[in-house]
Image 1 (cartoon, rainbow, N blue to C red):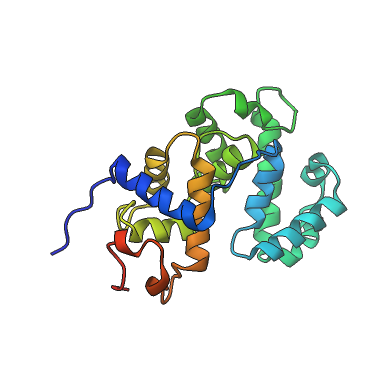
Image 2: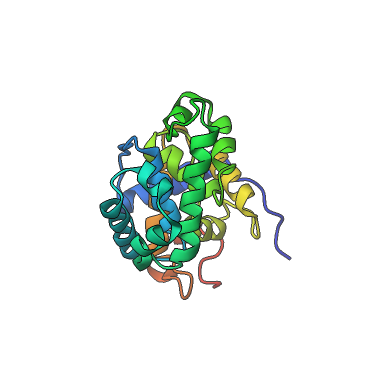
Length: 228
């Protein structure tokens, strides 16, 4: 009978962090400051790979140099601009709905910007971003961390898989719980490092199918090693 899950202690989190550092180094976050760009880029990343996402994003920016133009364009024109990113019909409607909502709900009526969220507490920024059409905790975390350097941590499929196998997350945890747990266990100021290094490990070693446990640097501290 397996033991009930308990949140990992600080020493365990630090041990995982330090072992990942030996393999992947300590990445440095350089927030780019463009929250809307990050928001739209994350929408375009859904259900596709990075290459298709980037092709769709640059196609959109080439066709419409400003976000106001994207907001005001016919949805068919937006769909055509992002077609190479996959499920363009859904994403084009979502992008336009987000831009319309941002224009209507920001602190300055009629201004298409979310830069104001960098001046409010993280929980308030999370609530606002998650109120936008089709935006959840992962997308909100991408915006807050990557664009503004605020304390949030995205949990994608790689981070979720690696963290669950290591016992950092409760098996079967829902999306909100995963993000709450990740944020709680991440040392302050190391949000980008832990996110990126867990993601790298998921892509390079801890695969969804047939993880490479035999060469895994975390093998000795992983309760799932050689059981998958």
